[in-house]
Image (cartoon, rainbow, N blue to C red; front, side, top):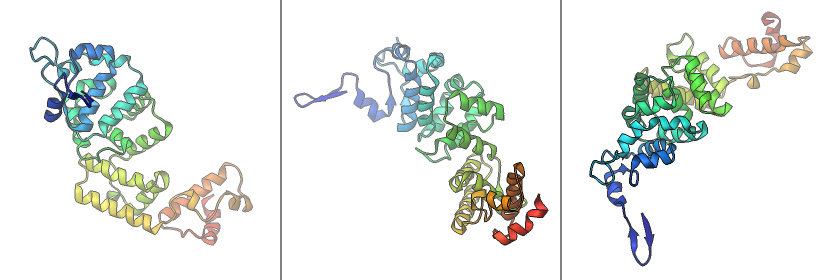
Length: 294
């Protein structure tokens, strides 16, 4: 569509009609448009997810002589194998965070598998269910963790690296994936479990982890809210959760005659005792414990 003051809106292809019907449609021959740029296949799905629209199931001319946008997406999906992975990553991220992500994944598992072959159709459909329980428009690493949830560790890493993600993205997705089945309240020491996770990844990670287990069906909404409350309470308390919070450091251990790799090992042992509430995070108490943990 276009606009000018003398003529007003110029709509040669009934764009307003498609907007009203919430339809994504290629102009003219869908197959031709996609062959011009294969990324348009994924962009059509991205727009459908973000706007909560659907690809057109009838051709632009309505005469049935050309493939519809929907048909062309399926039949020409292999064009995506020739697109740079960085561009694929950008569009897929927006798709996964869209309000219609679950619906689009459910309708186009063949396209997703073309991009990420390690995802079986069942894995894509499982991920589609999870997407509908996750926040819309944010937390892309959480959505990727849900997408790869049923993959092996090797497959998950292969998928992440194939999309040329940053190290920070990869670390967060891998962390969420590793904790995707963890329910702190079912562990022997829930407080220790939560403190350890918070110390490694941060409190926001703990909240995302709660969302992930809820999306996977391992925790209902009440359990998810309980996990949120536990994280909030721990953050408000602000206890020692990592080495940077520990009341002693490497210099203190060197002063006590400890050197080399033993410094890191000793600090980790002391931290673990603090996380278990078996030792207060106080310098005197920690120093007194050093001979026992070396």
